[in-house]
Each structure stands twice: as structure tokens, then as C-alpha cells.
Length: 353
Image (cartoon, rainbow, N blue to C red; front, side, top):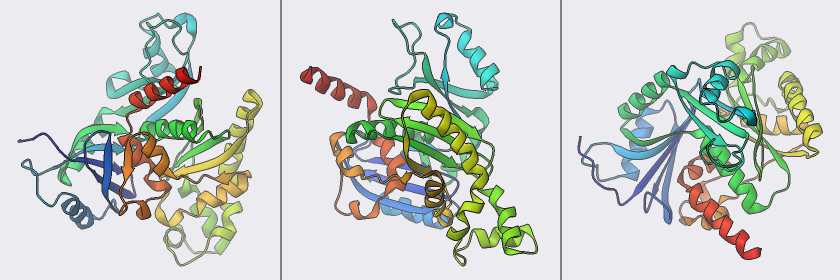
């Protein structure tokens, strides 16, 4: 397979519902985001057209070489407080993975990051952080994802767990905007909702909640008197009925779990959660963000990425600016070099001192 050095950069973020793509003037910052495209995850023809539009002249390899962020179904992203006295024990981290996270270490690719800044955790450093993030993808799903991307004409020269890049980008964004509120971040799936509490100081909490939007379908069936679950599902995922009025009923069980997590965090830290940022909702269920925010008494987070990206030497072209909203934040986070960002922040802090 023939690959050549790239003058352009390509970035892809893919979840169960949507594929977002971008072409940039360079693979690394400083760069300009020249073009973006979007299509449904199950629209093979639409994805092929988007790739051709971004890269009209086909690469010698026949593939779009891209940095890819993905959300594999069995991914694990968990904040853990380690025991400082055991950090020098070479078996300790494996023990945490098997006993606390209940993962088989030989079946997962695992990274351990500092919860505060996303840097690689290093137990050998003086005073290592005891608060860390474990990120894990199963080897089987990594292979499946790579094969699927190749079938779609995308060669992943970098494959990232998108949850980690989004959380890292969000911490950086909150630092840049000097936002004082904590943010509840939700990855809402069909069966599981992964919840995180994030501030400018890092990822403060994480919790998987064993229910997602599929749990709302029986409630839709009952409330509307529909004959079967399949009818309820079709109606729920259509645009033919306004479910916002049923929001409090549909989200009641999820809200109870989220209120418990928020309450525990606020009592422990004395800091309030004031913002909500939801990811991975199917486009036709986007209204759930507002319903959950209203039920929790918080605001849906508005993200304005242009100034933040500019501070990271990433510029949005005039054709891109009108097309992007908060849903594109994960794709942009793939472009940010956080090592450079942290170095720049340290330099500013030193000047102020």
C-alpha cells in the first residue's frame, strides 16, 4: 500500500448515528479548517460522496488518510482515585483494571491519564497524581472499527477513543473561557448513559448509568396507548410527533440517577453543576438535551469554538463557520495539540507570576 506525506490534514469523528469529516490546510496546528462534511452513519453513498468532495484527487493509496475519533460500544472511560501508597507497586494498575473496572487486561487496549490535564500518568514522577482516567477499548472492537473504516475508504493513521478527546477538549475550553460552573457531560446511548462532571480543573467524576433512550420506548407505548413496542419505537424516532411535552415522564428514571450523582458531587466539593452538554443522541432525539436540562434545573451548554480554536492556532474558514455548532466540538478536539496548549498556558502563568 502506497502512502505519501500529506500536505493536507483529514479528520473524522464517527458515532452510531453520524459521521463528521474535515479537511485542514495541514495535519497539525497551525492549520485552517478548510471544509467540513456530515452524513448519516448508515449512508454509504453519502459518505463516499463526502470523501470525494473533501479529496477530489484520489490519494495513491486509494484511501482518505485521517485522524479518527470513534465511540466503540464497549468503551470504558472511568475516573479513579488511586491509593498513593500503592503507586510504586508494578501490579497495582492491573489490579485496578481487573477488580474495579472488571476488564480483562489481555482483551483491552488501555491508557491511564491524569484527570487534571490529560497527560499520560507516570507513577515514577515525584508526587504523581492520584486522580486518573482509565480509557479502554476492546481489541476486538478496534479491529472491527479499523476494518469498517477501510471498507468505507478511510485509512485511520490515528485512531482515538473520542470520549477522551472530547473530555480533554472540554477541560481546555472551560479554562480558556474561564467558566466557573461545573458541566455535566452525558454520552447517551440506547442502553447506557455515560455521565461525567467536568470543570476547568479536569474530569471530576464519572459514572455509567445502565439506561439510555431505549428505556423510554415502553413509556411512550404506555402513555400514548400504542399496540406494540415497535410502533412506539418508530414514532419515537420520527419527526411526526412532538415529545417535548412528555419530557418529564420520559426522563424521570434517568433524572433520578443524575440528580443522585450531582448531589453527591456538590456535597463533596461545594461546587455547583450549572451546565449540561449531551453527546451521541440520534438527531431526531436532540430535544432530549433540553428536557434533561430542564429536569435538572441547569442550562444547556452553548459552545462557541472559533476563539478557543484560534488560541490553539486553528482557524475556521469563512465557509466552515456557519456550518458548525456544538456537535462538531469532538471533531475539533481531535485537532488540538494539548501538549502545546498546556505549554502555552504554563508560559502565560509564569508571566503573570
